[in-house]
Image (cartoon, rainbow, N blue to C red; front, side):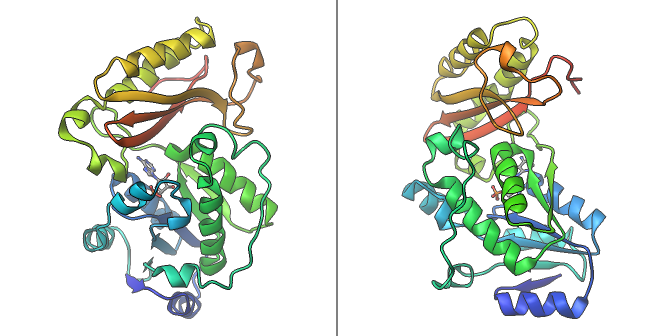
Length: 290
Ligand code: AMP
């Protein structure tokens, strides 16, 4: 695999290889098995894969979160070397390569997509995500880009971004990879206090139990159940829990609002000690549980 840190080197490497389709996996590093599952999928489907590692300041609405975000480039490279092939590329740009300062300000209108859930609790977050993904798409020009279902709202917004920009890039959503106790893998899990980590399985346990209730119980009761389960766990507090479809991301308050044929997901954000964690799982009556 080749490691590039400038746009020029990356473009030259991709043109000299002239391989297609190009698969792309954008990350912020501190890689874990969730990221690697995306990389393996891209490697399995494309003759060349680009993995980017860039902690994007524009998407952090909390300065502390940005400063504390784990950075471990050396071990990331080691992990990637076990998955990537000779022709694959790791792109690790400094900030000035991504934001040289002369990029045009682009305003997007995502209607309600970026206003609910994460959008409501992290003002400016999706602006920053869209800014970096748009810039990375311009640089890498991927045919296919792989994102995790863990960030369900992000995938929906990026699909809409690709549509609005008439991109050729296909957006693929990949399943959530979990720890043995069900906790969704996340770079932020490294920051959890050991005592908090020990109890963090409660998030997926609660989501799974709540998903079992969807056919028989009112949504307001399901929401109350989730709030109770999370808040009674010492050190944990619920930020939000919503049931929304993955197309319009419109949280429903009553089951009669659920559109037949759409896929619904219970989406949760929790404060675990000082760390904010998100997760989701499918909430459909007909869903087959694996
Ligand atoms: P991040 O480094 O957190 O920006 O994540 C990079 C990509 O990996 C995003 O598309 C995430 O949704 C995806 N990802 C993060 N955690 C997981 C996970 N546990 N399972 C699958 N994909 C994940």
